[in-house]
Image (cartoon, rainbow over all chains, first blue to last red; front, top):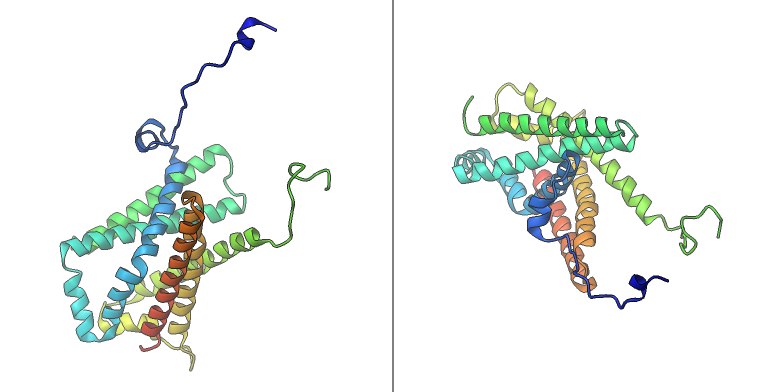
Length: 141
Length: 126
């Protein structure tokens, strides 16, 4: 046995790779990885918003013609518009990424190149639709 | 244990909880995707966005059947089941202490059941 292997082990530095700056800045996720974590984030946002933002606004909008008008005036507030746009993005992202996952479940587009391309398509479609809804929401057309 | 098992200490039980949730997550996803597309088509075919046309998207009838309410209720139930699986997965991935995780799971169930009751109350009083 060589001398190096019989020497008492020195205490070694422990490398932990889960600090927030490292997972956000040092390690860059591939496109499909970003799609995946945003799928989770968008789902969590929708879950949190459902009974406290989405359903109260829905209840207001369908209650009566006066409620519908009240909803319109609430939704005219720029802060409310930003909240709604974030939730619209969350829905569209979750929808587009979800369709991609259903296709992957059917073993469609499983190779590395196709998976990367479909992640790009999911981002492209959801962000484009978010921009269209955003322009509509902020009164561009 | 069968020689083709995954690892020699893995005990394969027959409860299939994981498979059931995997399938339920996808079935509810498909229900929601279909409802989203139906809803988007109805919205695009609506000539003017008024209170009446908006409510009609949730209380339309096919024959005597309250199809609008039934489809929306189905979508709400699918949402709750889908969200339960997804949010439970988030707690299982990130929350290690069993007591805290159980508490969060209980709160998640109450949150979603509350949403279902709230949504049903809105929809069926239209």
